[in-house]
Image 1 (cartoon, rainbow, N blue to C red):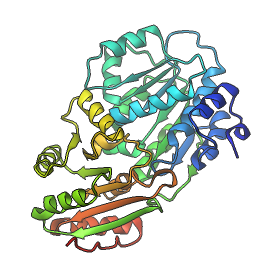
Image 2 (cartoon, rainbow, N blue to C red):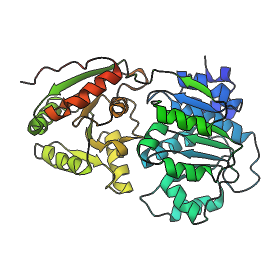
Image 3 (cartoon, one colour):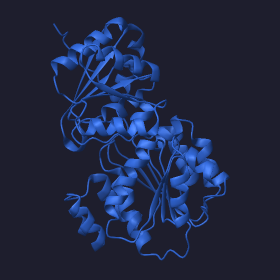
Image 4 (cartoon, helix red, strand yellow):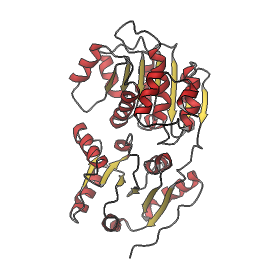
Length: 372
């Protein structure tokens, strides 16, 4: 099956071809037809399966078929982090290359002047993080009364990060008669309850099981004293030479300390976390993607939206307190059928976390042999 078979119009087909995409992913095959027919959607699929295309391609097609009678946005995409909002915008930019569609990306951490100027010119789509959008709404800069399409991306993470009240405030400013698309990597009870409150007879699409971890990701765990983690990581990175590696930390300060520690061994790295400026985060991510640095150290919040097609390795320096976060983390590698490696360090106090992770994913993570 190709994109022609699911009713995509010529300008978008041309853009898709120019992006080098040959056929839709499974989530796209199942989502695009009902979205084009006006249905609400609950889509559950692991990271790296093409969720952004699953909502942006049909949304662009629907918007292009309807005349924009004013300057107010007709579609709103909400994302939990700046990085993810920018990633979504990049996808929309590619797919809408041959369409008269305007969009704006709205996020905090930077001055609002450029964003406001873009909004005042008039846009069809706003891609936003909830906090900055609410701020602009309170200033009277944004008007959502013409929104026909609402997308909630990474819905599970938005709830985890405490955005539920912000989202509810935003929903009050959007017409109740609209099409709503909710996408999530996992579907816990809280998400399902929220979806039932805001969606109208949605089509449910579940491409992968809720606890699924990528089949081509090789997982392993080292049982290690907390004080020995830096030494083990340094050894692995030096032995791996130029292997591109994303390292997950639980705290911002821990990420900064780790970067300095491995730097003493000549390992160049960069950090992304909430205390970093937006420019610093973007520059660090760009350096990592371009191969200027091979080690990126990130907290979970900052890491959402990182999309590197062939990232070979993820290391969980700290195990996450939330088991489902483990699924998100290792989903950064092994994307789109590629092979990947996920290594976890587990100290004595983290063993209860590992047990919860193993219960969620349905098997015991293999214990790695010690590095000599």
